[in-house]
Length: 87
Image 1: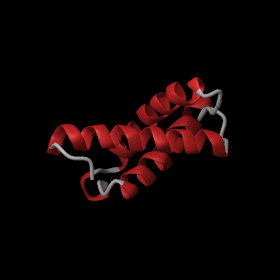
Image 2: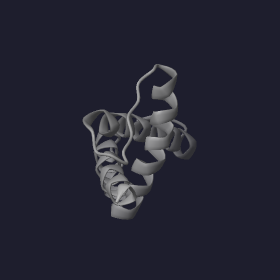
Image 3: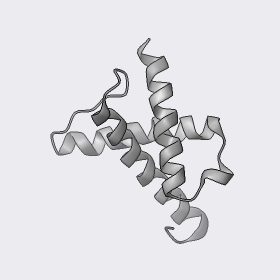
Image 4: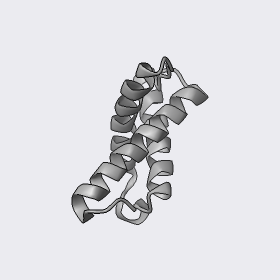
């Protein structure tokens, strides 16, 4: 059950991050889920360094926020690699 929740929360976090980073038109639902889940890993890695624990396996607002910020970081890196600039 935890993986299903992680996919849903990852999809929401990826979608919100794609809206913030102006990538929504070029991404579908599958890429939103991928970006959200990978962003969650990045966000958890960074958040754990500051003592913040948030997981998307059990839904929590902290987990969603951590996944969102990780997805924004991931999309910023992708934008920089693709275009040479962060939007």
